[in-house]
Image 1 (cartoon, rainbow, N blue to C red):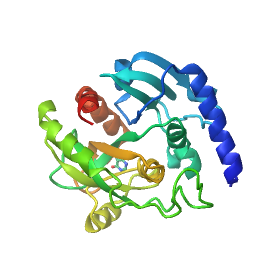
Image 2 (cartoon, rainbow, N blue to C red; image 1 turned 45 degrees about the vertical axis):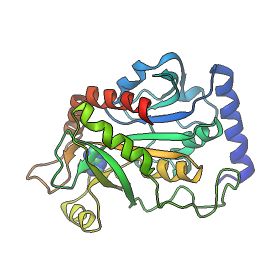
Image 3 (cartoon, rainbow, N blue to C red; image 1 turned 90 degrees about the vertical axis):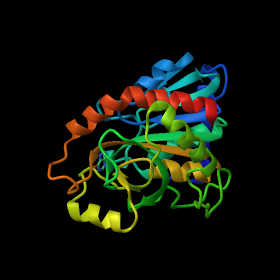
Image 4 (cartoon, helix red, strand yellow; image 1 turned 60 degrees about the horizontal axis):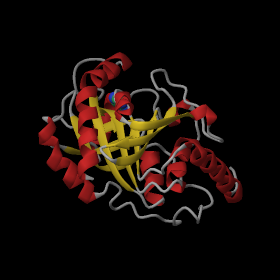
Length: 276
Ligand code: HPA
């Protein structure tokens, strides 16, 4: 585990490097999940920085993820877009998974939109639905804040009673029908992966309040809250979770649905720029 001093020094180096490249600092951060990569094409006056060029940034390994930060404006809002995220299942530590959120924090980002692909557990959902995240269950077996508290970055025992900002959720829900999205909310259960869940694990998740399940988001949202950011989360239900339907799960199905819904998802997130 790196010491607080070392960690702050790493963040400083990453921040300085980025500040040399970008003309204006971002107010909002967006993490693009599967199928949402095209959002980066909307960014105006963009400055793109590959993860491999940013001091101390982990390197993205998953196929289909570009692995870059895109700075610029959408609908007049100054953004930093993460195209490609780090997953715990890839073998990164929780600190590595959330390093980009810390970089956003030290760049002055005040709000974060997190998107992901998820399996639907709630029987009201179907593949292709976009669901607003109202809360989460951390079932990953780890917490990114474990270890010495980075006091400059946030409190030892951060409150998560509104981890997904309720004012932003109301605004996003109200906007959904304009994009032909049924306004639905759900609780996201974060799993470590990389295996999909068993039907028993899904029944268990349902019984403790989960509406959808995925392998990301929870670490980033915990760290964003620790750093005082407002968070909005959106899941794309790419498949129904194990045992909900009498069929097997495949990464192919997940990617196919994410592709199919991509355009609608991109348009909705663009629309959010005007209301959040
Ligand atoms: N389980 C976990 N993660 C996922 C799923 C799922 O069914 N679909 C997309 N990401």
